[in-house]
Length: 440
Image (cartoon, rainbow, N blue to C red; front, side, top):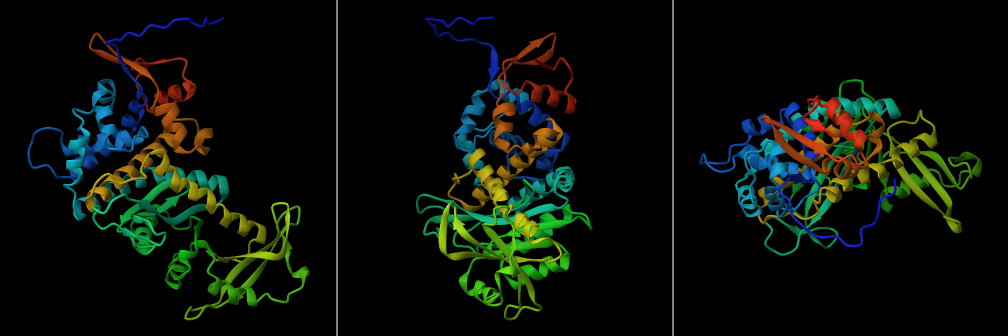
């Protein structure tokens, strides 16, 4: 059927309850199944007066806004005006951007810890699905530790400071299991780049992983420390760490200096990259460590006059060199998983001047990422787990729908022209939404 192109389009307005966040219904349904509203109601007690938007709805409004990819406080005004979306989310009220900012300033160190506890409880419910998926896919569970700067503008941000990059910043330290954001801490500016790694591993990560699960943790040069290595050895978790500091690389490279070319093993089919094991005991470390050294003679198509070496500390030497290098370099994919929430949820810039308020803001961002990953594992086809959270936001959460009421029965009608109609249908079935409550 040919669709004619209209020569002239008039503008008019309708009273129909149409929303561009109709897919938020599924996020809200999943949040209820995971008991998120109850946890917030029990853990967070900031309001003194029993009027207006309560603690639970205040935080749920912010979290659901994040789930739609709206990471600015000004977006709260847009959600507040979208009455059909507010109804689909089951919220009695939504705070304006000004009131939300005032509410976040009520947070202190203890209530921020309570939010971390809520995120931890959510991870306990969804992490088993994520762990099972990665074990089936890779035969091991990838764990990634890293931090990133959160740049701030102006001098009135509490506890912000100039970091190693020369920017005024906060420091966000994260741990991921696969692509699930299981731990996040917003720290003062100019903090140690791996600040709090042990507390986060022991409190947020270790309880999620059963004894005997094959773990492979990937880290950058900041974690090349005796205490980090000893912790992973005690847990019997495998790991690999980039060694990029020239002072640390030199003794490792000295151990292989002068070896013949036959000692090297090609790790690429075109033989442009080779690898070899090296062994070295750093000063004050308890035992000798195993390293994989790679060398390349090419930079793209360009030959190099001198080979380029890379050093990786590894916990095992019983795997092929090619496999060890592959496992470590997959760290780059998890670095993208860390950038994903900041980009897709629009979390690059903290909104408040008070430090604890910004900590609460980023804790809610972590909860939103957990909800979206839970939606990916429990609402859409298994084949779609390769996606990041951006397609979930664009194709599912931001679906267009019309909310109607007939005979005291509410129905949301999704448009059939959406690109992810199969996702909507699958989500309605897997989240046990009554047929007729979701109409396509």
